[in-house]
Image (tube, rainbow, N blue to C red; front, side):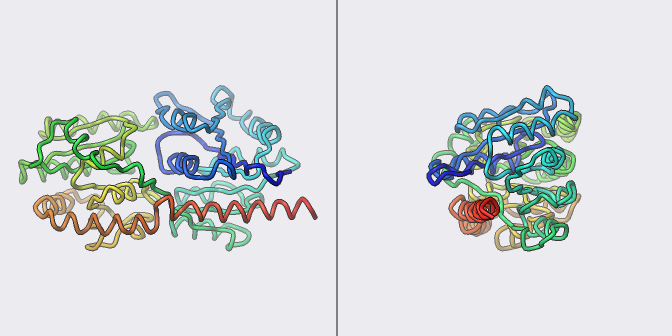
Amino acid sequence: MLGKDDPLHVLFVFAWLVVGGEETEVRLLARNLNPRRYRLSVLSTFRKPNMPSQTHEQLEALGVPVDSCCYDMPPEEHPPHIARFIREKRPDIVIACQGVRPIYPAYDLLDDRPPLVEHGGLVSEAFHNPKHYTSAYVGVCREIRDAGASVMPCPDDAYEIPSMVDLSEFREGDRESARAEFGLTPEETLIGWVGRLDPKKHVQDFVEACALAARERPQARFMVIGGPDAFHPEYAEGLRRQAAECGLEGRLIFTGDRKDVARLLAGLDIFVWLSRGEGMPHVIAEAGAAGLPVIATRDGGTPQQITDGVSGLFVPHENPPEVAKAMILLADDPGLRAQLGGALRDHVVRNYSAEAVIPQWEALFTKLAARRQAERAA
């Protein structure tokens, strides 16, 4: 039973920990929630060789314990371990991320079940599990929230809480620092992309668009920030070959995985995102926090993030020539870049900053904790 002065214990259960929007959300919750009122812990069930350990290290540095015992267990032992962990640690709320499948078999083994929140970063995740134990479904954009509502016993128990950005991570002086690291001159326009190198993100379209723009604008430089996806290591190798074949050696920088993404974003002039099949790309909000103009495809939650011609530019899917045209347009017009980037930053501050998002999580936690107390008192 939660004591009057005890912090609310929230357990996040992940399928795996890489470097993505849901991992970032937990990290920023840990940084911004009042520790006298909340404490977080994380349990992750799967690890593949070459997955980055960055999120593990960041969470533990923030004092968030990460249970990774499942990494050394066969899959059939994951539900019993999760159930034991919940019995022993007695979290007040459990949040299952990435459609993690062992959570329902684990709840079948429990007599006392804390409120279960499913957190959806993709539409498909809403359909991974049954919903008879799910107290609330949280989608990071309207499309995912609606998918959750369509399968919840009570549609009103589906919520939209967007991924947040901590504006304090974006600091003055980062632009000069980042550009100096890569030897960029003030006259060069740096156009970048950020994320795991995953085929659904269509990074190959970005590379092809870079090659087209490079022929027209000698002062343009390009950057891919992020490392290989552990499930698709060959894709990253193919991108490097593609860049070399397109004549982009010396023009396109592959940084690999970085912990200083906010600093590197500050060094960009233009940000590009060309995915198909995403949820709400957290990195677009980060680009907005850096005041960048964004070129993006209409995908998932991006229409909620960007208004075409006002706070960014939309381009068709799988159309590098149109992407290159947008790159050139923005490279030639610093005023338009400032206008679009400023509008997007204003939108991020109002809707995706920690100050805007943390109260939404707190309201949900309070509601679920009160429901839990009422059920126990009945």
